[in-house]
Image 1 (spheres, one colour):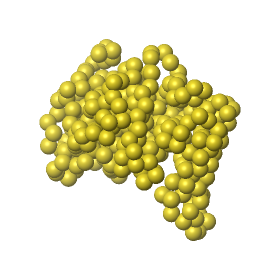
Image 2 (image 1 turned 120 degrees about the vertical axis):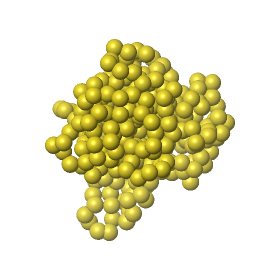
Image 3 (image 1 turned 45 degrees about the vertical axis):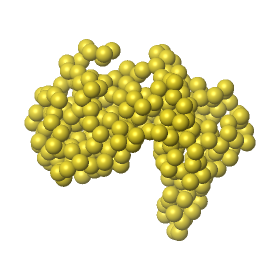
Image 4 (image 1 turned 90 degrees about the vertical axis):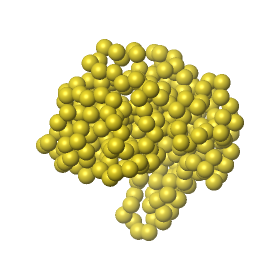
Length: 316
């Protein structure tokens, strides 16, 4: 491992595909300990640089989003809060973005599988999507959480009150995540690492890639939480620098999901009209580079959602 200088290591072979308080811990640590995790990509190794769209259509969903762990943090007990400080990442050289049939905000409009690979060579600040289109790299873990209070297995896919598939792109190095503890030792796991993602992850995938991530754990009894919270310091590191501004499309509807769909559809139309991208590629780019923002929720009966694309991403 590249991050083996940390006090503890959990290798990628120690993973699980659901949340369950019955999972035996693979490591026990004291509060304050740092742990390096070896994380598999969201496909669980089912996709590689040699993969085609046929492999996307054949993905076994029982193997997706593996999380590495769990780790037992000594002293953590129900009612406490587990502080998870994100220290650093060591990405691999390759990532992928796909359109998976039946998955994503516009799944009905894009029923066919689609796949692209990304060169994530060390030292690069951006990843190339197409000629003239560069996406800033900002690694973070998409799935991160602790064991649930209820017994039995729980799906790895949806986010929950104890964390899980949060897909909060701001959880980059230097931030802190706070998770409500429901079981003794917290039983923490992490996975689904991304090299970049837009707020909303509208097509269902980001730049998915295996990584190593180093984290520090502390037990907090001065906080009371019913759901995850997080803290950034200074400018939010998951936000893209936009010195040239952004181009935003909007959706206006009496349903929040429909407003979001309309905003993304309008951005796809804009990209298809002004670049060489076809609609499927434009949709995938929205998932890794466009940020959804809820602009207005008070003027009944309609919502306003914006889809923001930094001008630095596409050379218009």
